[in-house]
Length: 60
Length: 354
Image (cartoon, rainbow over all chains, first blue to last red; front, side, top):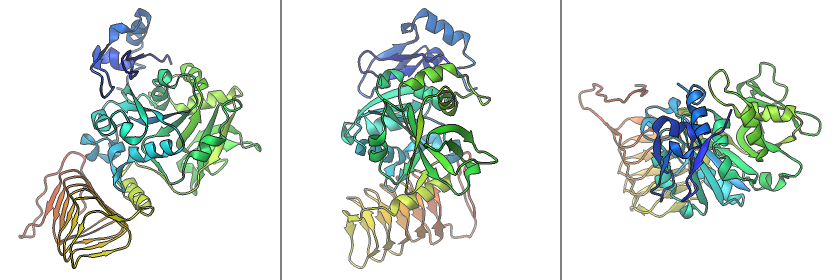
């Protein structure tokens, strides 16, 4: 299964693509980082893959 | 080498406790389960650690560990979100791992043995991975590792009817970045999860070398209330005694008791170790705290006889009843009614045996 993640450029913390696809944007998980990580920071291909395969990236 | 601790999962078998606290933060012998994992990894000489967080409870973990500097490590957090399987959790950490081999540690695992030898023996030039195993009495209950004469793994079998060996994989691995290609090659299993065993099995089938390392001493994974009580029992047996709190005259303290600053054992109370008392815990007169009990910070225990139990932060137990083999959550109140009737206010999924 394709692994899609986004790393914070500020602190290196990582968010899974499925989280970004679900919420659109999330606060960086880094404890001292105030960045927001955005779905549209992923490539168009990555975003499309997450949407097209959303059933694989969801346990519900 | 880096460390990667998986701290997601729903903790469904520990509800209602896990509605408000991730199971990895349950105190075992005075420390969260996850802190035991962090210590094992740090003592093996690893100071770069990734912690994979699930959908719930990550604030409690981040708030406790912060950037890791207070624990002698540098932590990178990885937000996995939904529990899509161990292989997905590992896959989310690819950017953190980079080109290094890494110890993978399931965050609800507790082991007695140090990991230094496991780490020192691993050679990433010749091995694609190594699995920590333990000989078990009932292999049909576990994920079992099958090996050849050279101790190389030839297969992984989940809860086999006819186990080829008695070696159970205990949830601690050393892997190399080769695993990420294998994870990309697999699909979710029938339960919708990306299984790490599928990725490792695929690598083995393709000729990559995986070995076993036998762990001595005890091992438990903390998945149920019974596991918490039993793990606490085992961990307290290795407890270093230290009475940093107040022990009043006429208090009776026997055995190995670790009492944090601010704790008070009042005159007329009895504490028989091994027992852990958290900061600000108060043991009132007439109370008996028996062996293998953890009383977390800011609890008050008054009048009861309690043993082989874990009481979380801020709870108050004021009763002349006996409490044993019990897990009590945070800020719980247990008091006697004088009319003999039971009056209960219980959260969802609670269990009470009267």
